[in-house]
Length: 212
Image (cartoon, rainbow, N blue to C red; front, side, top):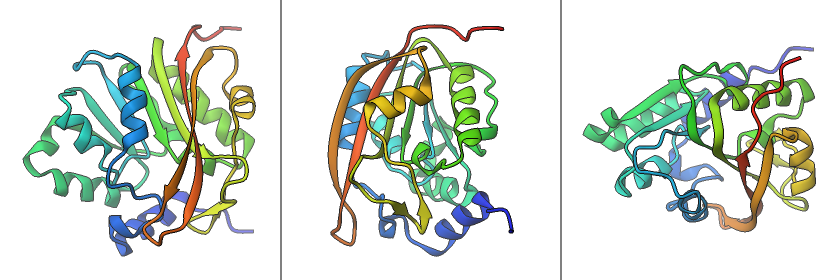
């Protein structure tokens, strides 16, 4: 059985579809922005948007005065579309082309945001690598915002299987180093006018990595 090439899949999506055509497109990232605001960060605090390649969240964060922004995505095509959209503002953003499960940071951040990446990791080993990268990247006292398909939401996205989450299921993946602060449900309306049920979670990093 041929191994799934995740990078090739997402490159193909963003090379052949307009950003506004994909089901996860949001013209305004209202709930993400609200949860980021609830984290009470300084404008200069380092923020990473994981899987945010073609998302307009980075535009809106720049407009709100945040100055230390990184966007990580497996698809260079997605990142290029955002950089082109931002024009001269693109130089204010750190663009990283990487699979998050293999990501190793140069420095730590105050906030890790992920809308609809983690739920694609159907293999337990991949989820462990994601959490490992998260723990290396997010500093003690930092905030984690994850949005995933909720229980009862879609079972697939972009033709791929996903894992649905509620708070208990996500906490089991993250472990005791994270404390849940907020949980919200969003009914996302896709460009095709379909409803997708998302669950959003905001955590605080409360314990450093345990060393065995």
